[in-house]
Image 1 (cartoon, rainbow, N blue to C red):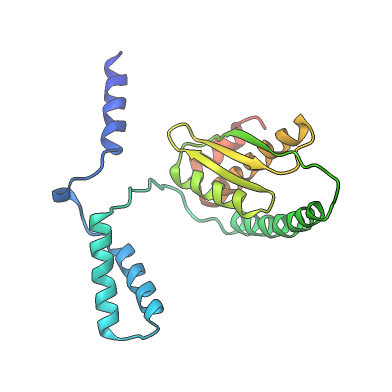
Image 2 (cartoon, rainbow, N blue to C red):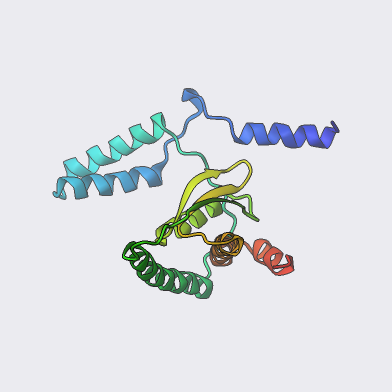
Length: 196
């Protein structure tokens, strides 16, 4: 193993280490979100509810710290608008397809579990892509492996290998829309260079 490989492996191991109790820092943004949720749950905006919700958020994020999300991108309005429009279209279309399948008596539906290797290796993009795919009726992400950047997808009514390839293509298209919406300039440029 070369010196460069050893340094990369050490950096990867250091970035996936869980912080010890002494090295944990409060996550203020998450504590503020927890305070807002706490006030909404109690249904009463008071100083006591705000303070107790904030302190509860500090305690929760100190005991159960969230891993850092490595995000170097930026929000792009037009690709994001396109992402939302395609999601809404897919939701409506797929709802009708699944409803028709439910009332198609005598038809034996064959389902499949499909492995999809994502192009990016970002936890954020993996999560957003998985959510987009799972929101559409007829597909569900059963497992996501962040180390390999792989999702396993349950797909309804698979009739041929072409249906499996269509499911894979749709997941990769969703991932591309996520990267175009939130990715850095380098990540978006890398999408343009990759063959479809």
